Image (tube, rainbow, N blue to C red; front, side):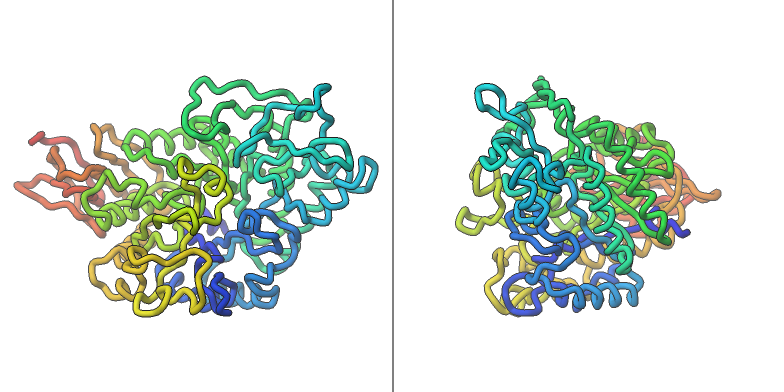
Length: 537
C-alpha cells in the first residue's frame, strides 16, 4: 500500500468558481475536467473538490441532502466519472469533501426524524427537551451566530445545529448513523476516489449529558462564538472511536487517505491535530486554521509546526495558507510586504518547504488577491447577517481567472454567481503563462524544486534560533540537508549571514563579501551547508 499522501501537494478546487462550461454562471464538473491540464502542469499530486453533492445550497453545498449523487448545478455522476478518469490519466489523485457532521434540513433522514419522537430516524439527529422555562437546553452557540438550537413544534423539542438552522447535526452517539455515513463513503471509494477531506472533523460528537460550555476568558472580536470554551459542543473524546472506524474503512482500499479539518484555534487546534493523527489507526493527516489567520511571524510558524510534531511524533500534518473560508493570504499578510508578488513568491517557497503535506487553493498560484465586494454582491450567510463587521467568505471565492481578454476572464459567458473584478482579472493565467518572472512561474519552479529534493519531501525538520523576522530550519534526509531561510519583512535583511554550502533552487539571496544578504521577503535554500548570524548592519 503506497503512502502517496505523505509528501503530496493538493490543489483545492472550489467547483462553483473554477470553470463554467454550461453557461449558467456557476462552475461545473465538465469545466473542471477541461481545466485539469492547468492543474497538472503546475506539478501537484492531487485535487480536492469542495462539495458537489445534491444540496439546497443554503451554505454553498455544505448542506447536503443526498450524499450519493451530484447536484444538477455541477452535472451528473457520469460527468464526475469522466472527471476522475481524466484526472487519473494526468497523474492526479482525486479527493472529495465529506460533510458528515451535519446534513441539510431537506435530507430525507431529517425530514423523517423531525416528524415525531418514535419514527425509525427519531434518534438520528441531536434532539433535546427545552428547559422548564422553554429556553434551549444548553448555552451552546452556532458558529454562524445565535444559539445552536432550533425549536421543532412537531416533536416539541430543540435540534442542534452548530452552523445554519438549515444544517441539523447528526447524532453520532447513535450507531446506525455512523453505519449509514460509512456506507455513503464506501459508495465514493468504490467509484474510484483516492481520498476524503473531512469537513469540521472535530464536531462529530457532542456531550450526551448536555452540559453548558464555560466562558472563554480570552474572548475578543465581533463574533460571539469565541466567547465560550467549546469543550462540550465539540472536541469530544468519543470522536476517536469513529475516526478509527473511518480508518478501517479506507484501509480496505489501496492507497486511500483522509485529511481532517480541525475547526478550532490556538493550542487546542494543535493538540487536536496531533491527537487525530497519532498512530496508524486514525486520520492520515489533519490541518487547522493556525496558518490561515493574520499571524505572520517566524515564532508563530515554528510554534505551530513544532507543536504538532511534539504532540504526535508519528502523526502527519497538511499545511495551507489560503482556502475557501478565509481571506486570501496575499491580502491578509499584505502589510508584511511592499510588493504583493514578492509576498506570493515567498509564501510559495515557505509553504512548499514545510514538513508534511501541502494544500494550495485555486488562484493562489496566480498571486490572487481578496475581492472587495459590496453588500448587494454577497451570498455568504455570515456576511449577510453581520455586515459590515463580518466580511464573510465571498471575497476568496470569486471565480478563477483564465483569460483577461474574454468576458469574466474566461470563467463563464453568463453572469457569474460572484463578480470577476478588474483587479482579479489582471492576474489571469493568460498573462502569466510564459516564463515571465510572474507568480505562476514561481509556483511551477518551486513545485519542481520540491519534487526534486527528497529532503524537502520527507526530511526531518530542525528549526534554527534566529531573531525576528527571520525563519530558518533544516530538512535532512539520508545524508542530504537543505537549510531554508526566509526574511519575513518588507525590508532587506538587517543581518548578514555567514554560510557554507551552495545556494540552490529558486533562492533570491545575494552574496556580498562572502556573506548572505536577503532582499525584502527574500528566501534562500542552501545545500549541505549551514548559516549563522555574521553582522548586523
